[in-house]
Image 1 (cartoon, rainbow, N blue to C red):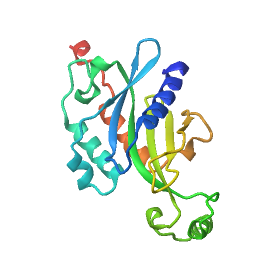
Image 2 (image 1 turned 30 degrees about the horizontal axis):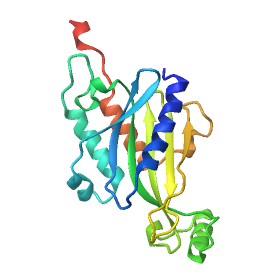
Image 3 (image 1 turned 90 degrees about the horizontal axis):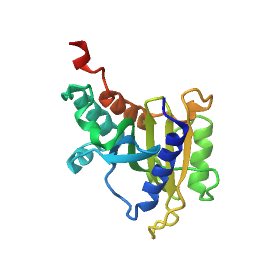
Image 4 (image 1 turned 60 degrees about the vertical axis):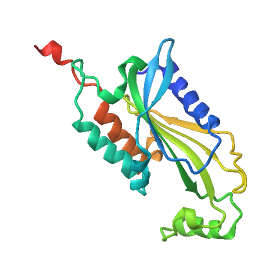
Length: 207
């Protein structure tokens, strides 16, 4: 079980990470999440070459491909994965940073209002990035070994400036009835990566 204090620390860490970003149009980034002493949390960057992100136009597809590769990598004798960085602390989750575009009924731009209306009735809409007035976001999705899901995001205030809004974060535990609100290919891909690198039983104890 992951202690509530660690869950809270992870939420703070996701917000702090987004708050520290100053550039837009960055490559995505993948992280392992570790518990440190005193119920702290540390994010460790998984070394992913830029060409991997560039070669997959859809970032979650790249994460899913990385998960498939991770399944083929060897493990330490204690069952920990090579990508889990055991010295960083106990592995408790994985996180994925990316940029995306969002629509909101609060936005006044007519193309956004029309897209929101059409989407609400099940109609087709253009790609969000192609809709004038849509919002650019910097996001982090995380999952933990207890089945918890996390989503942090901040929005670009003006396309001509780099200033973002203050990040907000949402956490939904495994048993939360609202958990299905945090679904989709980003969550699925991040979960696949975590499942590929999570600890396995210590083989030395089987001998």
